[in-house]
Length: 64
Image 1: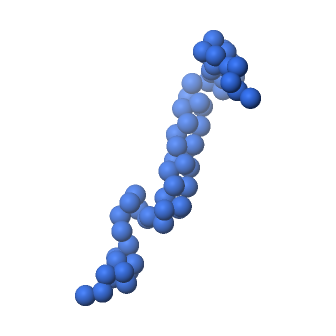
Image 2: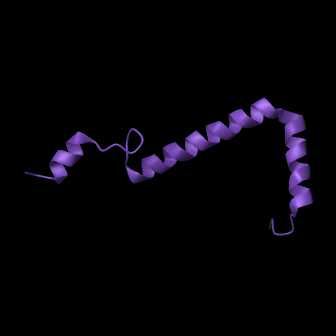
Image 3: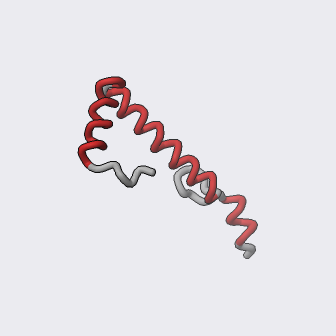
């Protein structure tokens, strides 16, 4: 589907996006998209607080 897009076409699309939205808006959208992807990955793996382990689940999984 997108196999026929080359560098000139991608550059043209980027220029049009910058003209329509502006640089500030595109960076904001990019950072929101990145944080959304990060939250999605954390939700799938079950990690909380940026990869820190939950003390309750550690105590359950590692009985002493």
